[in-house]
Each structure stands twice: as C-alpha cells, then as structure tokens.
Amino acid sequence: MNNQLQTKPKFSIAIQTDAYKKLINNTLGDPKRASKFIASISSAVATNPQLQLCDAGSILSGALLGEALNLSPSPQLGQYYLVPFNDKQKGKVAQFQLGYKGYIQLAIRSGQYKKLNVLSIKEGELIKYDPLNEEIEVKLIEDEEVREKTKTIGYYAMFEYVNGFKKSMYWSKKKMENHAITYSAGYRAKKGYTFWEKDFDGMAYKTMLRQLISKWGIMSIDMQEALTKDMAVVNTDGSYDYVDNKEVNIEAVADIQTDEVEETQEDQKVDNQPKKVSLDEL
Image (cartoon, rainbow, N blue to C red):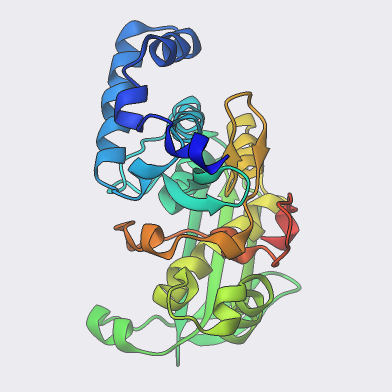
C-alpha cells in the first residue's frame, strides 16, 4: 500500500492531466473560473513543500470545497488552509481547515450580521460582566502599545443581527485554558508546537466565534458546510474523514505563515480512530 502511495504523481503534475482538468471543469462549469482556480491552488501548493507531498486527490477535493465556499486558498489571506497530515491508512493527505478570516467572511456574507466582534480583555479593563443580561462594562486601555503588553484576563465576543437581535459571551482566561487542555492533547502535553501555545489569543478568538455563532447565530448553507467539513480530509467522492490527531505533521504545520491560526484536529479529543466531532466540542 505504501508503495502505491509513493508512486502517485505530485499535485503539480496531476492537476495538468486530462482527468483532473475534466473534473475541475465539470465541477466549476466555467472554463475561465477553472483556469483561475488551477492557477491559485497551484500557487498555494507551491509555497508549501510539505503540501506538495500530499495525495493530489485530497488537495484537489479540499480546494474545490474552498472554491465552492468562494474562499481564497492564499495563505496570506487566511480564509482557509490545506494542511498536510499523515494518515495511517492513506499516507500523507491534505486536511481542509477553515481560516479565521474565512469564518468571519462566511458570517458577514450571509447578510444577517450588522456587527460581529471578538477581542481580548486586558487586566484592569473589565469593570463588570452580567451573564444574565449579557452586558459588559469595560474601560479599554487607550494606548495600543501598552494594551498589547498588558496581561490578558479574558475574551469577549458579540454579534448583532440587522433586525437588532444581539448575543454576546465572555470567557475568563482560565476558562479558555481549561477548554484548550480538554480538547488539545498537544497543549496538555506542552509540546511547544501547538497553535494554542504559539498564538493562544488567535485560537481563543476562533473558539469564541465558533461557540457564539454555532449555538445562537444564523448559519447559511455555506457556513453549515464549512463547519461540517472543517478540520476534515475531503475525499474525491465527497465524503470526509477526520484524521487521527496523533499523526499530525509538525513540520507541515510550521510551514503555515499566518498570525491568525485555526483550531486543528489537535482540538479534538485523542482517539485511535478517525471520528466526527460535534460543534459543541469545538
């Protein structure tokens, strides 16, 4: 099986074959759109040496999902990522991960949200938070440089629909740390490579938005599709699997150049078999 995997053509070669071009054209329908898609995904793959080693089918399927959601594969834009992982059964595959900016894009694109915000609360800023009425009183530090260096004590997220309905939530830093410990085996082990350890605030923002919108927000069809397949390997037949998070390729993760990193399968509880997870767990 491993020999078969090793003989599969690289993505740069596979995407130029008639079979792949036909699949792309049939899926997208528009030759100009198909040509643009091939150029953009080829560019994204070329910037990540580890991704180039992945099964071409998993790359294409994940990229077509991103295209269907009208999101860019560019790592610089941070809308979605194709992250290389080692799967025991399939070898090296590309996992679709919804990006921080892509998550916000999908929410705003629905046309239902007048406001959507998430931010860290610094020491000395929080005056009061009333969870019953969901009202927060803060006095933000005006000096941005001072604020950046001040210790974070919690996180606040809110949205307001165009019809006036509002929802908000506040988590203490301790609660967020407990969440990370519960759902990230790497963070529990303090391995030093997890996104929680490299950019705790970025992970916290993503968690707050997921918790807020998945439980109380209006989700478009695109948003539901993205959340269902976020952190999954999309197969060519449209099915999807969650790879075993113990098989994460650390070098590949390190290749992602972005400050706004996403929750990965490290935030699923460790299991010896691939599994689907509920939004509540994320």
